Length: 601
Image (cartoon, rainbow, N blue to C red; front, side):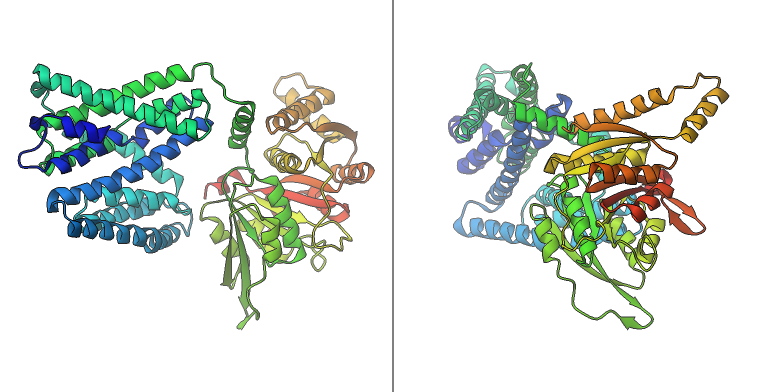
């Protein structure tokens, strides 16, 4: 459509002395691109970003963006150096080499820099410095190659976004600066060059209408037909056609470059600038009409509900996981718990730390994690082998590079201790939730058996909710029966009653408290697609009662939540946790939650 329009537009649309073929290329590029930022904003404001068609729209818009920038780079080379085989090959080859080096060497350099500035925890100024420096360097390189500097900035954004060491706060701050200052300046500069007086003649106005009509109809038709060929429903294809019709900054950039290189006249520039304004309004209005009262398929609704529940979780979220391991049986059990509890889309980094101390180095090659990779077979897994004097410190420093939780395995006992000295140190320093997996007693196989039944105590605390998330995640993958267990002790009920009376309130009965706690846990289970069963037990010692409950129900898994505390310089997870770890024969998982103040470090 753009080629046809560029071919028939009158000469007063073409810049003085410009080659008509280059003008056609610029017109085609301007009409064919979409605006990823505008599309994303419209979808977000309508709450459609996570819908199936919304994800496809963003993916298609992203691909369209990349192609648009490449077209701009090549066509700009034609405008400045003329259309020739030699010039074309030079531009395309230089662009290809730049893209390859940027995505390989450049990506590694950016990852290294972002990793270094984050070594001691969140470092917003340092990360923003890396972003600005990367953008300027790549912009200078593309400008040197005879390609617009904006292409280098675009590639810089792609590289920075791909880095797993990037901090989410950086994007928020850059967007704030962009929306409040840079974008208004950009659009104001573009608007200053627009001369609407040039469209006063009937001929110019008619041709402007032709350009806008072709831009809307051709984009809608292409999107609709492509979506139908890809198996989308008519309504989804219509929504894609409406969403991808939005144009924005890229089209304005193409128009600006066309004007500055003399390809576009001021009349053509003014008409091209009108296209993103009109199509963005058209996209927003038409998309709102298309999706009205459309909830999507049952599978899509289930996925959206699951994602919404996941976003509210404390521990089982979408952030990368850190598994500390030397491939011993305890670590294998931890990897199995991790794999079943978290969605398969969550990537995992397996870190093996060789201890160096007393002038000696632990001998031997890096541990073979083949078994762990087999357990995590559906996930993205990378392995890092570190050497450090302080193993726990090395793991904690690694955990500050954008992880959501730390997972470790422990043996049934470690030289008379419930935890190893390394795990004690890890718990003292951790700023993330720590999942500790202890294999069942007397287990002779590398992996525990299938988890058929799990006991989860319900106390109404943050750590209790975290334990429920782990258990419900496992149940969702394996069909494990989850038994929510509340232990009713006279001491707790009496303390609650005294506390309420001290505030002048009537104390609730123990049954009311239990019902309230169970109701919250059952609601969480329902949100995660699980239907747990409940039981209430009376007992003076919660730990002892939980061990008895696990034995009587023949549970092969107990999941506990614990708040990290320090007693006499060592971590203390509570008497209940220590009792269950000591006496329960089943597999035990403890989710240790650090203080909220420490999680912000």
